[in-house]
Image (cartoon, rainbow, N blue to C red):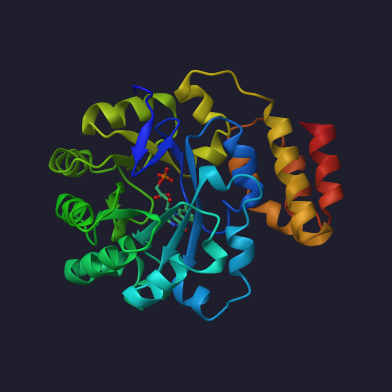
Length: 312
Ligand SMILES: Cc1cc2nc3c(=O)[nH]c(=O)nc-3n(C[C@H](O)[C@H](O)[C@H](O)COP(=O)(O)O)c2cc1C
């Protein structure tokens, strides 16, 4: 794919390879090390607008970005324009220039509240949300899916709606809600959306290698790509796509990640939290059954660190 900078309102992302929001994975500890591999922009996981309004204690750690604020967009979710705008203008989000609105989360607890992907059923309400959020002095972006169920294609309509109401970029996860995270992305839907708007369109879904990124941009004409699970399966996927040398080894990537986790969560919690990354970091690595078992049962961050140091 052609590497280029992306203009998002008056913000310029250095390149068009973005790190996706992933709840429970892309907190500061992961984003901080991943950003060093070259991504042009990263996103926090989805943060409840109402949670910000009601001073939910969890918000601070979710937006925590020490020194990376200029390369991090905060993603919020909700269904009421008032709460969304309140969150955007809150003290908690004051260090961030870009706020992304989640219109794609498939999880039932979010969907049932009319939030996340449920907004794809209601373009009028979605427009009101984008319009209200765009009245703030933040740069507003939107992340959608191609629809709710197989065969749907609302991407072009929503991209136009987002643009018309003040969004400066749209990311399209080329799958419907019922597909969750599996299946081929709908390249045609992304292409159609791209051709209907002037704002940059970022394509997402199923990009696990440089050739997937090439294929995605070739088939859709999208301005850039967003990588989610591929960032954990292949920690240097951004380097591959950008054509740059990895700044450190995979072992150093994991150690860096873990050290941040230990600092943020403490010894026991960091080990437990790190377990969910093991299937990603070690997928396809041969002869490490024992190591995997030890990492998956480790109760101490220091012990996890030792295991990685001595065995990888
Ligand atoms: C564990 C997990 C958590 C996710 N959390 C979010 C989220 O908070 N906000 C969001 O917009 N998308 C979220 N997503 C969706 C991803 O950003 C992305 O759209 C999706 O995984 C498709 O990309 P991929 O095929 O490269 O993984 C999540 C995906 C996964 C697997």
